[in-house]
Length: 189
Image (cartoon, rainbow, N blue to C red):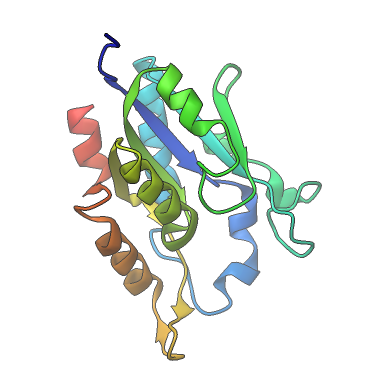
């Protein structure tokens, strides 16, 4: 009988320089200006305890994307960049499980819980957290270690970054993931 998966992995999704390109804020400013600092705190905690860390890199195939290889935006942000020996998963769509080895990596390392951080809350973070929950992982999304931008809804009404972020977290809460703050995660990990 296979032992139950018990380890907890920190996933850092798409935290690349691309997110600082002004084009992302064309509809309005980003929320959670402390997200990178909170991710760095979580990363230091995980590293200090020798817990598994997985960096997810978005490699866009779209010609104008700020996440396209060969552009400055493709690089990881320095404060949370992978260290030698840390796992990097490269994805081409928002969901970090699609077309990658992420699921196999988690299963082979007996990971039962994933703590999801990064950008953009209503895109790659939400897509990845939904799949993690659907695949049976205990999934936590860290509310103050994720961030997004203002955007227009389907009816054309401008929604602030805080509104978009809050709705994305509400979409995930309960069914796919539990939502916690950095302080809550640090207190229980």
